[in-house]
Image 1 (cartoon, one colour):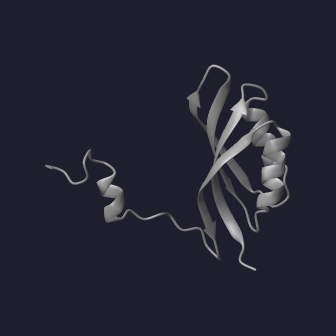
Image 2 (cartoon, one colour):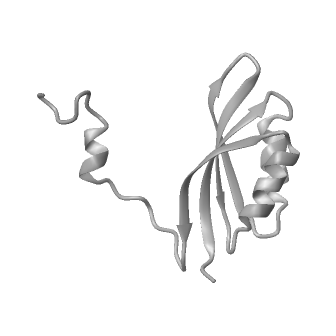
Length: 107
């Protein structure tokens, strides 16, 4: 079985518990080596956060259960890295098209 080494999740959560509690709880999972949480958006009743988790053989089901236990909801899995090494995502021409209104510059 291929090992998941990094995962990036878009999560909606209530104001409490705060991101420090989220980070500590996720870091306690055996397969997790490190957790990074960034606040993306604050609404009247919820916060949207981006959670980046690294480790060897990450257990997505256990991670998702812990987020649910903390009253969070996973909106999407934004990135997954699997295999022997962690590699960075590379830019493609399609990425450039999303930077400009209407597609290509000058159009």
